[in-house]
Length: 94
Image (spheres, rainbow, N blue to C red):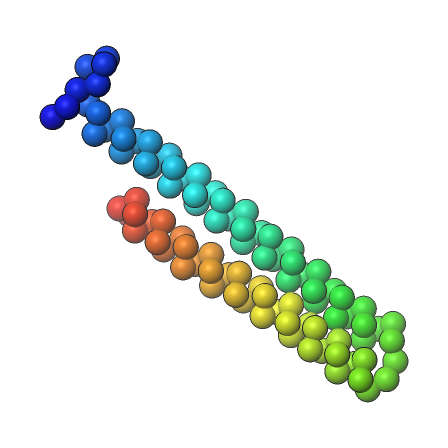
């Protein structure tokens, strides 16, 4: 077992550092999820605005497509978050 300059266990210090890095990665993953949610809501709002403020069949269809696109962005972001969270927890040994 290696000892650091202060006589502490070097492998334990690295483990704590890695754990902190993984915790920061988890927080970054949560921020990324919030960005996906924010983007998704903005796209859905744009689709709703298109439907409300413009008339015509084409504009209604375009608005519906934009709303579905926004929902798709939200689902993609949630799935990415779950996948990354699972990977981070596996690396932490939980």
